[in-house]
Image 1 (cartoon, rainbow, N blue to C red):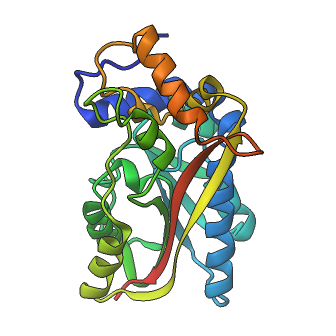
Image 2 (cartoon, rainbow, N blue to C red; image 1 turned 60 degrees about the horizontal axis):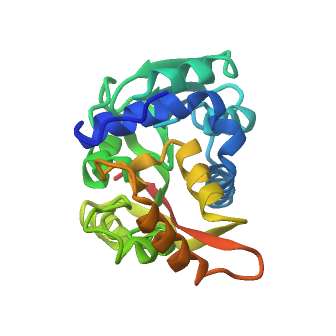
Length: 265
């Protein structure tokens, strides 16, 4: 299957990449599951009395987070929204009692103040986090809970280093500093229950395997800004630069994970 064209608008490229990744996404999404698991643990620890009747999973993909939420609150009504149709097809195969909607989480097609819990794991970084926060506030009831896992600005530093002298293209998604998100929450009156930022690192035997792992979960923005494949000499130079970072466990790849739990004013 062809990769998304680098000349398409960024969000359209991202949607196509996730559509293409949907079939094999769950098999490859180890880091994504870990970050979601941590979000669930933080949410349960900070919300001892939380018992939501209505839950939104924003950017829920194949439904891993929604299944966690169903297991924790089996009587809650869960709505999963994602902009990649094939991700929703994969989610439907594993979620019986949930409403699935294909839409952009920056423009949620739901009424104001209709959810007790807004959950989103690793979706805001593909969007405008400030816009996502505004929409979360709109659709949450007063006193509703926001639980978000996203990525910070220092994501994939190894890839940025390896590509630095290869060409002038941007190979890593540009993400606003997470401190801006925290500030936006505080300024707009959210009550912060939990905030943390931690590296989540994985190791790979070689560069091709590493890049394949990124593409397999739809994160093709690491190489879709470049309109043509790397030349052999550029690939050799890229490999050499990344090999210089090798550790005993292999070639490192670091996700800059961020977790936020807050109460809507």
